[in-house]
Structures are given as C-alpha cells and as structure tokens.
Image 1 (cartoon, rainbow, N blue to C red):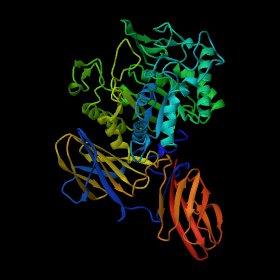
Image 2 (tube, helix red, strand yellow):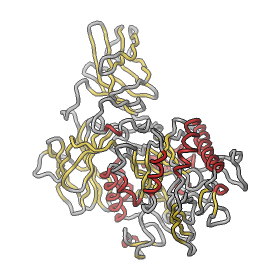
Image 3 (cartoon, rainbow, N blue to C red):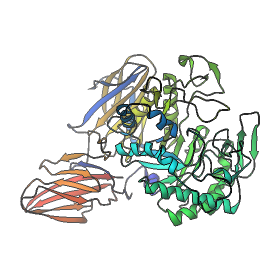
Image 4 (cartoon, helix red, strand yellow):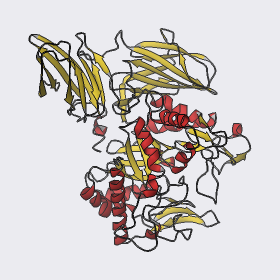
Length: 604
C-alpha cells in the first residue's frame, strides 16, 4: 500500500492503521462522538442557472427520499485532483488579479471552493501546453540528461502550481509524461518527434528515461513542489497528433488518414520494473509509482497484466485508470490505490454535430466552442458517481481552467473540451460551469484525508462519513421542485430543492475547512477551557489555568509521547507534532489534582 495511503486495505476499520500526523487537527471532546445537541446541519442546493444556494433544513417529514447507511462503509476516500496545464494558466493571466485569485480559491480553498487535495503535473508538454516541448529537448541522444531543464516550466506551469500552494499548502502532486523527449522515440508523426510514435525499446534509452523522471522529481523538489507519485506514461494505448507515445500495443491516428492498431508486446512494464523503480528507489524512495494512466480498453489489460507479472512486492502502489476502464476498478481496489486519472472532457467529436450550446450533450458535438453547459454537468455527475461506486479512491479532473474555445494542440482535429472554470479572453471574465458545481457539491464538505464512502438507498446519491463523524450526502434531483428528505442516523432532515440539480446535506460537528493560509485547522475547547489549535508542524495549547503544572500528549492506550512543564503564569505553549496509530491523541493538562483531557484527531 502507498505510504501516503496507509489504510486502503482496512477501509472498514481503523484499528492498527498508522495515520501520519499532518496539517489537519480537530480537537474533540473526551467522549466518543455521537450526534449531539451542538451538531449542525445545513444544505446547499443548485439548479440549472442558479447555483450554490443555502436551503433551510428542518427535522421530521415523511418517507425519506434518500436513506444513508453510515454503517455500510465502502472505500477510503482521498478526494479530487485537478490537472495543471499551461493553457489554463495562460487563460487566467488575462484576468484581473482579483479574479485570478478568485479562480484559485474556487479550485483549492475548502472554505470557498472545491478544495482539491491533489494536483496532476505533466512532465513536459501535455496536449494543453501552449506548444510542444519536453524537459530534455535538442538533437541527438542525451543519455546523461545534460540538456535537462525546467526553465520553461518556471515561467508558466510552476507559477500556476505555486498559486495553488499559496491557498492550499498541503496539496500533494502526482505527475506523468504525455511523451518522452523526441529523441527517445521512433516513427513519430511529425519531424519534431512529439506527436505519436513509439518508445525506443533499448536499454540505454529506457535507462535515460528513468533518469529523466529522477531529474524531474529533483528539480521540482528544489522549487518546493514535492512529487508524491508518478505514472510512467499517459495513455500508452493511444497515439495521436499531439504529444503522445506508444509502448508496443496501441491504436494510432495521425489525423491525416493513417490509422490502425499496433499489436506488439507491451514493454512499459519492463521500463518500470527494470529501470524506473530501481532508479527511484536509489534517488527518490519517497516517490511512489502508480501504473498507468490506462485508457484504451483494448490494450489496458495487457499492460496491467504485464506489470503485475513483473512487479515485486511494493513496486507498484497505485493504478491510474480513465475513460473506458472503469470496469477494472473493483477487482484492484483491495490491493492498490486505484483512481480515475482523468475525467472525461465531454463534447465528443465522433457524435452528431449541432450548432448551439443548448443542443450539445454526450451524443451531440459542438465544433466551434466548448459547450460547458448543464448537460455536461449531468454527464459529469453520472461519471463521477459510477467511478466512486466501483471503489475509486481518488478522482482526477482534467482541465481546471480553459478559455471559451477550449481546444488543444491537435490541429489535425480541433476538439473543444469542457473545463471547471472558463475564461472569456475578450471580456476578461471568469465563469464557474455547472460541472464545477457538481464537483464542489461532492467535495467541499468531505474530508480529503479521513472520509469513507458509505451506502445510500433511494434517489441517485453519494454519501461520505468524515473522520469527525459528520455525514455528507449529495443528491441529484432530475425533476421539479420538491421537498427532499434525507434520513441520517435515524433522523429525517428535510429541505426544499428547486429541481433540476444537486443538493449537499451536511449533518454532524461543524466541518473543518481551509483557512486562507492553506493550513487546515480547527480549535475547540473542553468544558474547562483547554484549547488546542493545529499550526504548522505542531499544536498550540492554551491551558485553563495560570498555575504551574504540566501538559502531556498521550496515545489512547495511555503511553506518554511527550510531557512539558507549564510555568507559573503561563497560558500557552507549543507542542511538536507526533504520530498516532489510531488517528487519535490525548492532550492532558495537569494542575495538582485538577486534570483536563481532550481528544485530538490527527490525519495527514
């Protein structure tokens, strides 16, 4: 199991799971949490054209529209990811600074937005780069990476990433190349070598690619961007007229009349087992390998079976699947961190052409711009729900931001694609799309680190149980205005839904959300005013007395992890972060015979 995902195998119970202490801390009362008088409940509703509105919640009502079974636990949930691309940052740069800041908050802030916990970084150009490039360009072989450079990324992509880090400092990153440097390939579609073609299956070339990954991790680390995981190749089963690369078995289409299938033996698994894994173990053992990303269902099983046949224990921690491969999720979730590596972009060019935004949907293509309409919001809800119900541990959005046109580098076939946020370059305005609100409905109040998906029955819905006991239920209403009733822990919660849209109901302790500095924190008091607040790398403890005493941090079994004296007249001290196997620590203040204790939930 991945080091940063310690509990995938034990998603049905927390006993014995090592939960590293990180930036999130929630202090709970000493009693085990049950739904109590000081719990809160609220609902957010959206309908077509009118999004993110508060709805009054009452208890009672008749038969439940949706029933949440909080004891029917499913997979551990690690939240949503967003993909950084040059085209997105280029679009954001036409906005005012205020609107650009608003966009970043809408994406990464847990208080005012989706709160992405993960970001995907392309290694070199994706199809939404501003033009084609790699991190080791130039003619001729360069096995020692003497030409390697991330200078271009510093001028665009890294600015985008650092803007996200400024809002959410604990965001994690995974990365993958769309193509290796062109000199590593053969039979490319273009003279420059970026589009299409196949990786040279030669030992020194494969070794050089492993070094390429290592250099990327090293140089991004110097920029304060740690890479938690890498996938060896984006979509090895397809080559197209944008940065792509085949690895033995793939479908090709150069956009100029040459297309077909290459039915050779895959060798991506050989690269991972014999080159990438040993190199990362030597240089960056903290970075995991997630196999993929796999999208072509005609070749994906062959790639994955090849990898499983070569992998030793611990070599592969995760599996990235997308598009047609949702059927592969459920058979792998018990042994790997399995995630959807790319949300489908919609507006499919192979469907029937239409001429208006209103007509575009999953079976009708709008050629002159990305529709970004309500139909795509509904489609996105269905896709996300399907992947989560199959057991996906994480779900990665594709483009977070694009302009109204939404096209990529493929000039042979212009394909306007949808995004979460859209920039009108002429009017210099920012618009959040219906798809954005779908993802926000599912994400904002769900814990990215400690939530578990739980079962529901009734209307189309998803539900999660946060680590603090809070229940988040997301319901889709395809009909008209209705009184929606959601049963949670034996209580019916009722609110009015305006119809044609989504609702999020939260029931439980006040949810923890992100502060502006990106450090997720919460503070609470016991009856005796012992207060604990999470800060960077530690806990600030405000004690309930100015008498001399001591403060202790203990495990739930009573083992004292550290003890600090409290000087006479002191009211506050700082403790360093500690590791908790149960995910809980006890904070105990002792003043003579007076003892005050609180529970502290900790999660990475």
